[in-house]
Every structure is written in C-alpha cells, then in structure tokens.
Amino acid sequence: MEQRTAAGVEELADAVAETACLLADVQGGRWTDAAVEDVITALETLTEALAEAPHMDAHATLHLFAVRGTLSRLRDHLDGPEQLPPAPAAVRPAPSGTSGRRGLGPGWRGMTVANPRR
Image 1 (cartoon, rainbow, N blue to C red):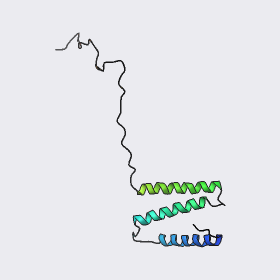
Image 2: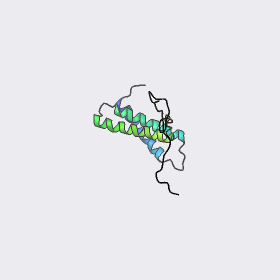
Image 3: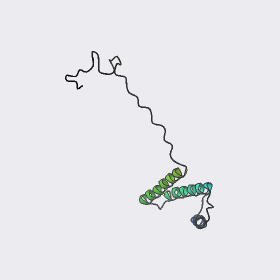
Image 4: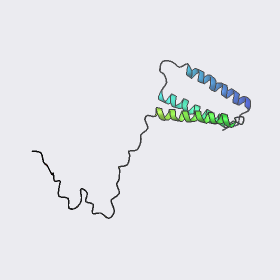
C-alpha cells in the first residue's frame, strides 16, 4: 500500500465522509445484502486504521475496538441465527462392581398389606 502525506490522508477521509453522506441518502430499499456487507467491511477497516493512528490514546482505542466488536456482532446477526452444535447425549458411567441389575434388589418378594380394604 502506498504511503500518503497528511494532506493525502485528509483528502481520502473527506472522500469517505462524502461517500458516507451519499449512502445515507439512499432511499427506497436499494440496499442489497452485498452493499450492507461492503459498508460493514469499510467500517471495520476504518476503525482498525483509526485505532492504529499515532495520536490515539488507549482510551480512544478501547472505544474503537468496542465499535469493531459491535460491527462483528452485527455481521453475525445479519448472517442469520447462530447454529449451535447439538448437545452431546448424556452418558452415564457404568456402575463399577455391580452386575448391572437394577430395581429393588435380590430377595424382594413384593409388598404385604396388613389390613387390606375390601
């Protein structure tokens, strides 16, 4: 990428601002998915470039990275609902030292009722 003077950077920044104003004036639903994606990419690139500017202090850089994170979440949102992997099936460890028999245990013969109602 070519090196620019401060005046050249100002001219480019002015062109970006003018283009942003033109985009803001778009009416009638002429925004395509590709156009939205391109604008998000441009905003991400600009926030990264500003964060690396020599006169940005740590506090300003944190704000720019917050904007970058918000743009990333916006991109994810527009890409559709997040597809979560299916939850793994619950696996129970086999009891150790048992025969695997379950229930009331050996020798159970049922219940007896002392006073059955008839």
